[in-house]
Image 1 (cartoon, rainbow, N blue to C red):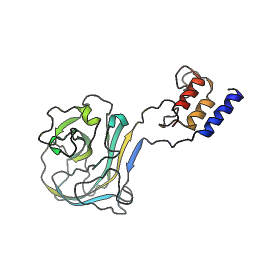
Image 2: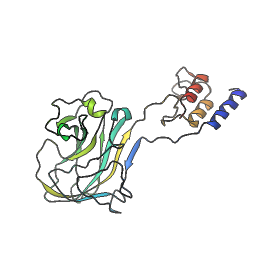
Image 3: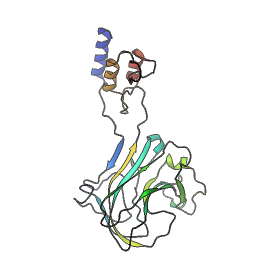
Image 4: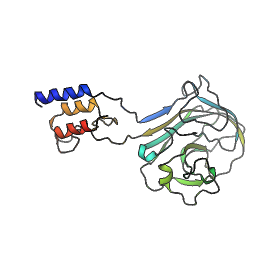
Length: 274
């Protein structure tokens, strides 16, 4: 690269501000305060003990009278919305069963993606796509268990192992996977198979580390995949200027894939800055 071009690039770098890289996972640890992301609830009042979580603070529900506990989100958050556009790849949660009247045995944890069928506030036509996981919910005394579920958000048809269930009397008979995956109204977990019948019991439960993983959409000019085009990408182009090395070496600064890092790649960075 010529001295003149190096000077010009240096000037551009000084003018354009670098931005913070985006993460590919978000975790709600329930650490402090009450404004936790996702509005997680079992449906009754909760507390936040300062210790005993996985680790530290956690959300505790006591005296829950239900046939099947269902920790779930309320309102809009990073846990809801268009999973396909966000590139969601997985969701997960940590659970603890402190006490239950009879037994929590042989209940696999199920993940449910709930659709409001385009009518927020009307639960009569709600439905969900769900997948039963391989792990059973924790029994009293077993402590915290970690659960993670792959979310095939880029699939355009109902993925293998997934099923649908009507949650309201007016829910569609043959709901479309594309409708829920592009507009998840609620993320919910279900203690057991949601098609089974269970007796009512009293439960004392804990949740911690509700999480969602996603793959940021590729951005033109982004050499390092952090979701932003900034000084790091500019420097990558400068430092890789010229012909790309022979395979199997990689050449991430060759943004247009023509085998050489040159002015065209530099312009891709500049034109997509931010």
